[in-house]
Image (cartoon, rainbow, N blue to C red; front, side, top):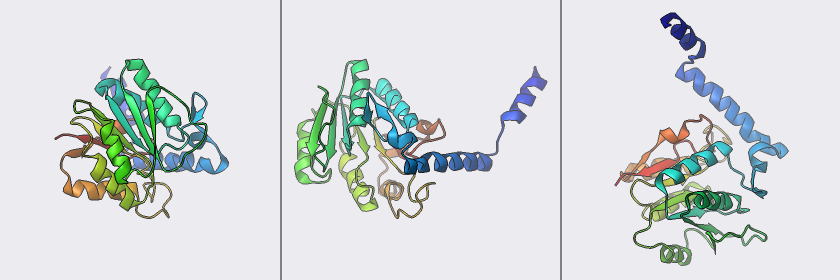
Length: 228
């Protein structure tokens, strides 16, 4: 048995450096397939475009089941597929509502009793006050940031919405993979850089790398758990 175990270990073992190289190469292949309209850019939930990595959506459902948030704030609605996915997960646990924010009033977004659409910038005073009005003092709150990916904007969102996240819940910064992490190297400072800057001064959050267990994630170092 020991010999067999050793053979299996040596067969599957990959050094951390080689492992990262393999994952990064597949990540680039998968991400860049959007150019041809395939894979993640054409991922749908109940027929509605979500434009997210399915492995991250699976992580979301695990978090929702475990923590059972009362409110999930989503900055960046797009077609509404991710809001519908989150609402469907809340249906399964019979709890929760989605507040989703976008600057564009896109027609034909999905309607669901758990979804509240807000029109405007996620960092505008009007929108922020409306979000606060929709959250009760006792609510457990989770936040997902997927709007403007400019570093300055994401950092501002982190400072604003980080205060709304309740202890042990998450603020998820999406698309930290851009600007060469490992994709879209020409983007410029974006979500990853915003996370790094935010954590320099904010010790209430820690990066939860356990949520990257499927290797491929569009949100590396982007799952931030509030610990205080």
